[in-house]
Length: 474
Image (tube, rainbow, N blue to C red; front, side, top):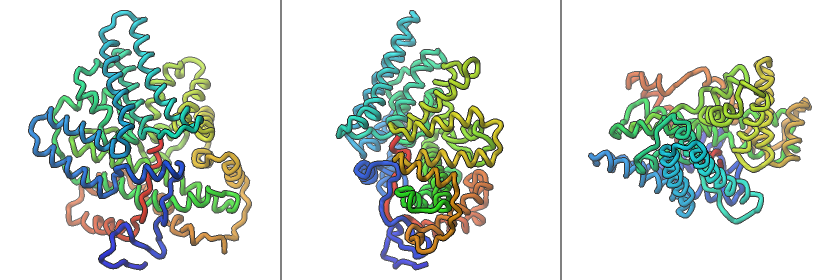
């Protein structure tokens, strides 16, 4: 390894063997959209966000009135969102004000037909907004940006109005509390998807700054996943799936496994950091992942993967369709296909959701190794949008060519050996549950060497370019 001079920043390090990404790679976004996302978002792992967070913590700490603390958090959340695009805060505001008003009307209305009409108006407005920006604009090729995080905050507010309609919760009386529920900055852009019944009751107690070892280690855990693992696997994944035809099956397999780990570490890393940031202000955010690759079957996988989305689809789509009571196979297929469509207006996401529906239908009798094989195949459908390239990659994945002549193929240039090492390290790390909790329980003397090792890893292996979170596009 080559150590840089003291005048260079960690982000600019160049490591000869474990070389970080040399360029900005955005695996699922267009280059124009990717550039905007990278340049203007307050990413959790950047210095501008650190400054933003430090100012916010200071303001909340010196403010003694709880109402004022809520207002500070709300303003900060809007600043966080408008850092990306000031104009795109308008759909967020429209959704917030509309559903706050409609939920009040739904609660006070006594006639079922009127209550149902108001709920339909709320759902139509939210789904219409989502469909316009995410699907119509995409297919019409209009020069309009997709509001970042729109799929998440529309699901926040839709679950709220549905729960009020079902009389499971009371309509929120405080516009400040409701707006903070919709726009709370740690979860605003990429979840987890919040339920009003989870978050609004927490606003009834005073907001207090909490800084504990467990919170800090949880944030570091997410940072390690995102920066050291996901971002350093991205270059191999992007390079291979840009043109699967030039690579043998062995490389396609490695790239597929690398992407499965990349998307998990990228998304769960964000969720870990979001939970830690919320905990700093005294809020508890539900876990979104629980070591999903240790699942024994498709059903268990969806109990462990993107838990806030899978439970949302279960409670607000699958069960209303009939659940297990009638036509459960149809209900599973509709739910999972629409869950795939939630990710984007392209056929590869529809195929991904459809395949997971099939796995859920037949998966209880499926041996675990067969399930993991099928799961990796679905990740190719998720990752590769071009239909021809997807079919090539799938064919090479399924019909193994036993071509192990990897010399002179440019594998050094895409950091193949580094990626294999990361894959092995990740698989071994799955045996360690909740490392943040366990590290926080250690005495400072015992945890100090681990902290130094993590700091050294960041110093040497921090990628030189910012890579946006994959789920920012959703």
